[in-house]
Image (tube, rainbow, N blue to C red; front, side, top):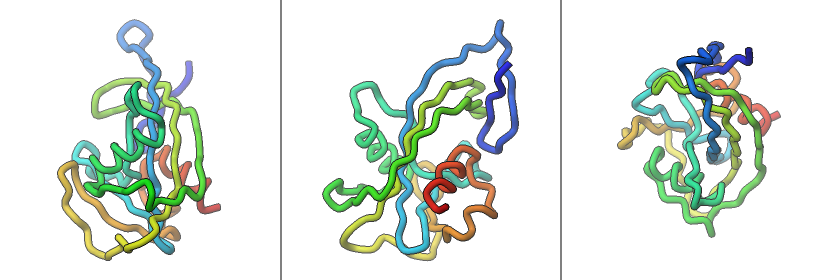
Length: 159
């Protein structure tokens, strides 16, 4: 049986009778300013910093879904004309969403971007409707308890 990993990296195994595995598509934005990336901590996962993003609606492109999710989670509206996509990372993972007790075959796309124009970087932690928003130095990414699958994408970007 294939393991499904939660946001902490712990393996879970679906019960074939009780659990349904469903396909899902998601997109995230890794916003970089200098040597920092914007992170969020969602209300449903207080101990796990992650990149802003999430599920993409059927009517959206990956980029549109990433921008919408970024706005919802980070409470920042990114103007597409002011964003430069530096890199894109795709991965297909087996994710156990522990907050809703669901197993997902998750196709994930991550966009590493930098914003042109005004800087958004600042050192404080901000409260946002869905949790917290803060900037983390990229050299701290390997030492932190970042979301298991988001850490994989970040490592691909900063290698």
